[in-house]
Amino acid sequence: MVTMSKKPDYTPGEFQWSFLLPQYWGIWIGIVFLMILAILPWAIQYRLATFLGNLAFNKLKSRRKTTVRNLEVCFPEWTPEQVQEHARQVFIDQMIGIFETLNAWYCPHWFKGRVTIEGLEHIQNAQAAGKGVLLLGTHSTLLDAGGYLCAQYFEPDVVYRPQNNPLLDMLIYRCRATIYAHQIDHDDMRGLIRNLKEGHAIWYSPDQDFGLKQGVMAPFFGTPAATVTAHRRLLKISKAVPIPLYFYRTGDLKDPRYHVLIEPVVDNLPSDDEVDDATRVNQIIERQLRIAPTQYMWFHRRFKTRPEGFEEIY
Image 1: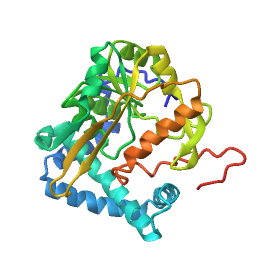
Image 2: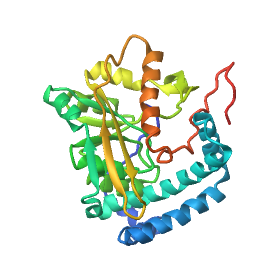
Image 3: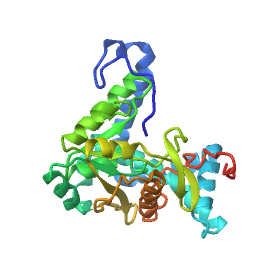
Image 4: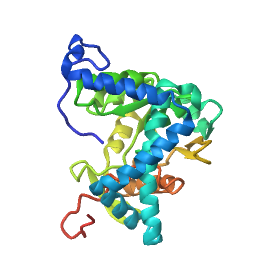
């Protein structure tokens, strides 16, 4: 997930007096509104999320079409009715994830007594041996709520893409600062490698299609997909170890519980075969997503890169 973008001409998280100009008033009003939503009782939050998720599913036709197509490709055993049902739930889970993230930012006490973790010793053992940890995760609908769950047990760093709007970027950066030990710009490869060499645990999601300039074609749920390989270089240079990480919601939405799953170190990654490495990482992601299929951002075009000879998906 190493892409090039224009560098912001401001320090992340830094307040600027220009943020008080009228052009930013709409964002300030929006932030106050979100803070109000964050203090609502969960029963109201999840009902609002369900309403908004259904609304988005019905109105965002392009995203809905992409979601349905992704599910058809990845879960061919599902009937058309099951695909539609799960696709709708993807949008609902995304909206629920927004409220969960607001809770993580503004009302973190809501998660007290709701979180469990499995496999923490894998990170602890790696760091005790002086190794950095590259946490192989996914673009979960839980968003930053997942980072908050992890932060209850260890200090995670995160790789992020700066927002185009500087005020929005400052606000999100400051909210995330209450969760993550360090936030690393996705273009700051030196900072990322430095933190890995210093023994940090960094959440990294190699699960999106960035084309073949940054990856190779490897099977994802049995279908060839452009798969990033940047993590191989990071692991080689930093001598860090790859550890799969997954977090998800369980139970009744009226009284949810959250679980963080940390798996053992992936052996022999990187190897000498980048396609084999990409295939193994995709298999890890597949295994994770089957735990809670609708808690993933399926509205991204995971199979958009189709080289000559490969069937078009969308």
